Length: 157
Image (cartoon, rainbow, N blue to C red):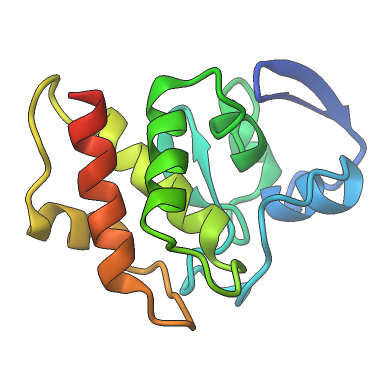
């Protein structure tokens, strides 16, 4: 049994401690907002926050999450987080999503970037590109993603 804090709630899962966080979320807890893309941390679809840092949940063992806070897309965009709400609104405004499969990972990476910025500082295009690197969008909406991140940053400044 592994005790976890996911989206501010206590959960206990009966999985091997080496089970990737992704599978505990999706298969054990039914939280399917976090997506499986590649299984080797190359595409970013599985991105969640572990103590506020964007991580690839497909390769991170659940044991590494004990005593830490996991935040998934379900909580990050539920409207209670100012930055999450700004990113979500910018995604809609810039019509970022096409197929949508990568979007939960893209949004989680964008939120981590903005939460990590000093208050009032806007990320540069290079900082946005660096933070979003490793998040693959098969539809190629990278220009819209970059614009949405910059727009969300202005909204929360």
